[in-house]
Image (tube, rainbow, N blue to C red; front, side, top):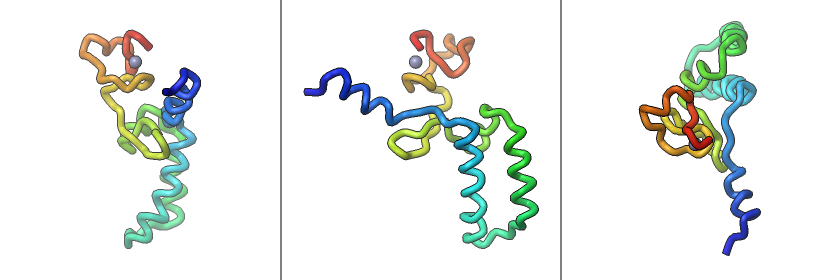
Length: 102
Ligand SMILES: [Zn+2]
């Protein structure tokens, strides 16, 4: 049987992606695209990184279609509470991205 502290540990493998995470994702994306044969110059990479840096984290979530990292996996939990991951009901929308309990 799990005690409460063990239970907490399993939950801690989930976290919301930060702007820093997205910038790292962006940086890693270019070598991957190049390896797939896309024509990308260093100048293009630099310009794109500058653009990403100017964006809000909410915009980056939309571009990458990811919100969380859970057990090392990138996940998209748009439309769910960002804390407890339950689907958001339409009447919860005034609390953007969080349910009434969180
Ligand atoms: Zn919640």
